Structures are given as C-alpha cells and as structure tokens.
Image (cartoon, rainbow, N blue to C red; front, side, top):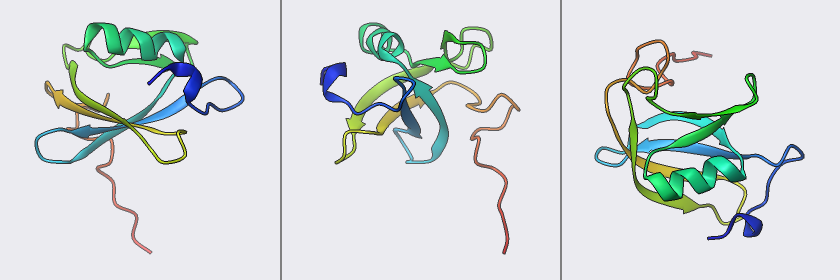
Length: 106
C-alpha cells in the first residue's frame, strides 16, 4: 500500500502496533512517518519516527533487539498499522519483552 493512501495525523504520522508474529503478543506501539515506512518496507527491519528526537530509528540499532518484519497490515480506516515481527530480545527499552507489562487494576 502506498503512503499516500494512509490516513495520517496532523503531524503526518501514523501509529504502528507491533505484535509477535509467532505467538500474537503485543510488544509495543510506535509512530511512523513516510520515510520510516519506506525504510521498513525496503529493509525488512522495523524503522520508526521518534517524536522526541524528531528523527528515524531502526529498532535494535543500539540495543541489538531488532524487529524483523513478517507482515504489515492496515486497519479498516487506514489510520493504524499492525506489524507482525520476529523480535530479537526485548521490545521495551526497560528490558521487558513487551512494553505492556504493567496491569492497571480498577
């Protein structure tokens, strides 16, 4: 799917939910811009846009915890991506396998 077909927010970004391709575990959520989307498609490695640093980052570039793309999906509204990946090591910068490790209890 071409970038122009996707619905982005006002900053030209689209959220990407990242899921383990083997077991379905939700690993993280990150933002993508057009350049990170294209680099992901070209390289097969998940590449994101850091809003705080305002730059691209290849997941695993510094940690060695790369995410190898197995499949990319777009939702019905074309405003959220789902990436199914083969995760090397931890997905979370805290060292946890998933960024979603803290349960909120009502």
